Image 1: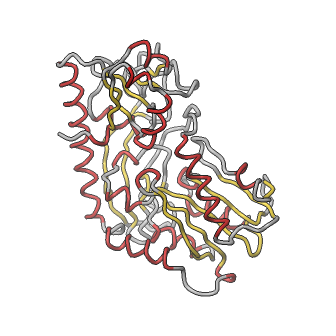
Image 2: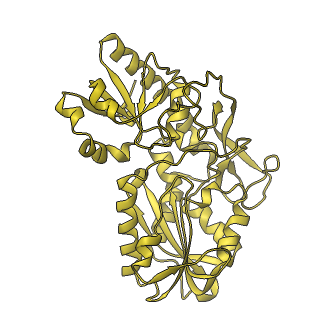
Image 3: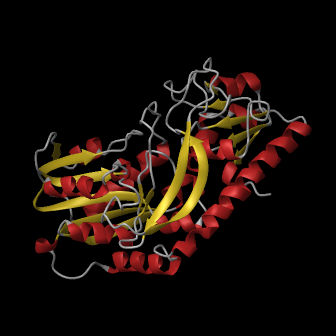
Length: 370
């Protein structure tokens, strides 16, 4: 990003709508024996006045995140999504697919192969181009979308899955902002981006994942036979009501960043005073800014459990809190386990029954209030 130039339309005008101050790189997990201090960098969201794309203002960090374990919620949602796209008649009976996946893991290629689509790599054209949370990791948004569009074979479909910006605003999900995530899409902004490469949205599907996720199907304008369908029009109307292009609509995010951090610190302090044994679960990048803003260290939260072997033995960025193996849940018998990824609630309760069997309780971090 050159100064304050939009990553999509290159417009120079916009507003900083969320400022989380100096934060460590959320995808760099130091070793537990690394004393720090960890380097910190500005973390700000900028809203383009021209195209309405919410985006990371600047990112001097280098992506290094250890690969996590794909949550069951993502696997279930991917299966549901492929079924819905198939039912809509948008997948060819025989054809090819190219996937632009998220660096955090997960793939739909196995599911699509079962539908008769053969994966292709390199720059080869494909009948289906799938991007599930991948585009947001591209610093050059216009170039990345143009590259995906150029690979789509004539008559094909481009599938883009994204965490909806109206969800982020409605639910106060301020910690969706993180280094390495360069864009936060509204359907309105994404529609404008697609128009620049000669595409239009055809239809879309909504999912509960992350509080509100959208899978949008787009085709070339030359292939279109009319306006976007009722679902897309509904999403655009929701964007208008949420004020996704109005910088004043983002004031609630800044407020939530303050109140959620205070609520977490106060809750942990109260539980320590009460003698409760507390562990965290889910060494997710979204927890990094929260822990730092809440001034949480291992005296308040002794460890964060995570099922990814790549993260065990490391520590949470910007803190001295170690990331440990799930066996610690049985060994330490915590009274409370603070879940940093609410979508995992059903999965972890099923996977680790020993917590509740020993009288412990799972706590959704997003349910904490001052």
